[in-house]
Length: 541
Image 1 (cartoon, rainbow, N blue to C red):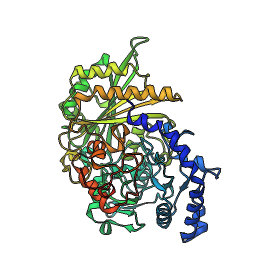
Image 2: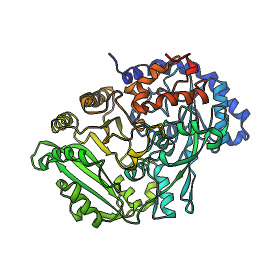
Image 3: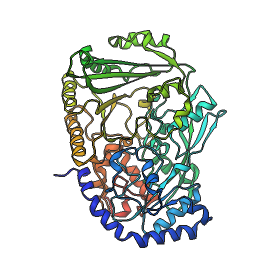
Image 4: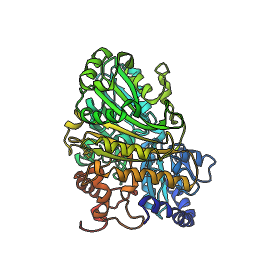
């Protein structure tokens, strides 16, 4: 039986051939519409890219970090629009509706399943690429910021650091992640045990709705404002900007990365970490990266390396007693801790030297280059036994060295104190940690793709007894189409969408569907995992 992902890509060639048959007339009509309804037809012509433009493919592929979605066989948009202002987005929405084109919106960062850049529907589509909308305004006096959705996290951190050494924003460590999608999906960070998620700090937003209307928090209402702070934005409209509260951090923080292999008791250390990771002092967040590597003591053998990567909001002299009390087994010593500023910690966790200029954070290209990858996620409420961990290690030896990684990210602290219904992000109290699985590869071709994706699916099946159940939960920002997809053609029922929706949102899924029904009853903003409005298929079953 074909998996959802395999089925989707088996349809790609059929969809591609059908869509380009109808594309010529649609393309011309759509472009004429944009010109006629634009306030400045000369201006909008400068932000439109079609397959006839020499720069079309470079614009299309620039924001794709996953090489799985850079291929001649992947369905491509008839038009890419890179708006300079909100009016150009409003015009694009109007013309897309008028000419039966779907819209994909991307903020220029990462997209695990490529949904911001492709569509498998037979309906032609346009990409609205927000890369030009990346203004960041920092207000030191109020400790707030307005951040346009096309900015990257690196650009946000750079802007904050230019204004203050003791202000920060709790979002991801990867600087090339786009702000628009990251915040709308939740936004976990190295500050999350102290300051929760990025979405928990949103106090206003600017959105263009299905009718082309500009909305702020007051005019959109609290239901839609609730939905976009963790429920994803692509189902509801085009998010233009976020207003967020910044958080205060000490002028000096401490980082450390202590690695242990199986020969150095890695299994027992990971097992022990599970009992304390969510109970540390809230100023300390310790993640665990697990990889398969060549053994340094046994030639020709491979081993597992667990790297305990941490951020402490304070100096090393106060960190050491905490570690000696809570996790003496790790054997951390003073020289392991490196004191630095918060902005230097961003450089450190991304693999830059802390002596580098923070201007490296403005580079929108991924450090090390693009690669093929597939990710999945889980949540854990009960510690996994040592035998269970050893079963994971066995499976890692089946994959290429350094090709696979598990990232264990702890909960607890402020992150777990917020109610599950406060925002759409429901993964709060009761979780010890989140698991991010990812496998990378360099080989081209379908055989390599199937081999590596089959491996990560096999690992995911193995983990079933050890993770959350009813539903088996997942994190939206690690989007995974294996969890279920909407119908390629026709409407999708609430029951069908709940197969994937309950895993991301648990009981919040029902409210999200009702918000969708209210703000976009015709289901204009849609993708393979968008909320179906109840009005699109009849009463709920």
